[in-house]
Length: 165
Image 1: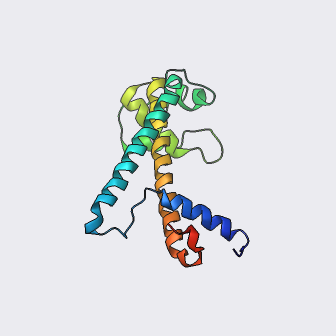
Image 2: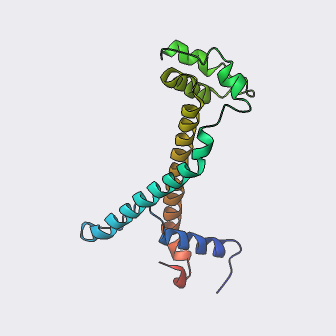
Image 3: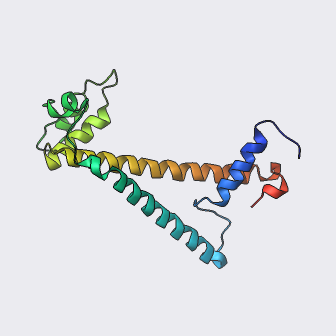
């Protein structure tokens, strides 16, 4: 086998991952819908399993108090303590942060919406944070899977025969 620098091992990894990926594959036709349905079921099952395991892993931490920079950004920040969600209150909350030069406006709006819905209860702030991170992790997994599947299809002719699925 002819080595092509970093590309040969990279193609092997792409091929191995794309055989096990759960992304939508356009090569499935109506006649092979059973295989596509099975892939979607496996993706849904694995997604639920990952979410359940992540929730169980972080469940004990959800009941803890506010920590570190939560004091100045949430507890002692009066602009986050909104009682009614409107554009003016969210705008004030968004730019009330003191964490760095960018002030984390999305985080601060999330804290304000959390405060409006649940009050100053740490459990719900942490639960929302966990849900946002799990959602982003699943989105990153799907995006990566789609990109690897595209890359495998685009460069399938460059792959050695024994690496093809």
